[in-house]
Structures are given as C-alpha cells and as structure tokens.
Amino acid sequence: MIVLRDAVLDDAAAIAEIYNESILNSTATFDTEIKSTEDRKAWLIQHNAKYPVVVAEINGFVAGFASLSRWSERSAYDNTAEISIYISPEHRNKGIGKKLMSLVMEKGRDGGLHCVLSRITEGNEHSIHLHTQVGFSHVGVMREVGKKFGRILDVTLMQFVY
Image (tube, rainbow, N blue to C red; front, side, top):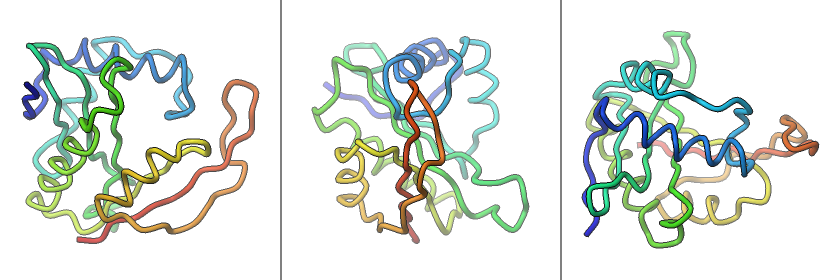
C-alpha cells in the first residue's frame, strides 16, 4: 500500500539515497556531487507550506519524493516554484510519480503559488508525458545548457499556471 505524506526530517537519509542514485546514474538532475543526509535535512528545512516536499511510503520505506522549490530568490518570483520528482529505481513506472506530483501541486496551490515550472533533460520523454498528464504545457527547449556524463544536453521547459 502506498502512503503519501509530508516529508519529515527523518526522511532525509532516504531522500538523499533516492536523489543520489539519480545524480550518479541519470541526467534527471544536473547535480554532479552526491548529497549527505545532513544536506538533505538542511534542504528540507528550507521548504514550507508554500514550497512543500511530499514522500510516497511503501511498507514503511520511502519509495519517492516530490518537491516544490523556490524558482528564484528575487521576490517578484515568490509565487513561482520549480517541481522535482524522484522515484527509487525499483518503484518506477508504477504510477507513484503521478500521485506524488498531483499531491505536491495541490499543496502548492493551497500554499498560494501561481506558477510551477519544470526543467526536463532531453531523453526523458516519460517525464514530459507525466507533466502533460498533470496539466503542464510546453514552453520551449533550452539548447545545450547542461553537460553531464560528457554530453551537452538540451532541457525542455514546461509550465503549469493555477
């Protein structure tokens, strides 16, 4: 059974493990250095009702998480967030991402957000499809903006306006 809930500091180690797997093995994130549990605790503390973090728990273990983070420190962007979704490899393609995404988007709306943006690295058509299902629209493609694993990569920008 999948339990969706707000993330707590005790989830930091599991969140770090899931995120680090993506850092080391995918282009889903352009981070290149692994994150510690302490780093993820500090990251969690920066989130709140407007910029929530939610987790999916299966049999007592965190299987994935979704977050809304500040898009920019400039105050004009205070009602805009960036979404991130990461699922542990053994739980991917089971609908958990869509459930997490729907919940975090609902919480963002309730927290007063107006716009959510997403940057999706080329080759991740599954993520583009997921975002489209939840109501995001295609904004454009930023050409050759990131480099990971020796490849220069494009990034698709998608947007949701409440």
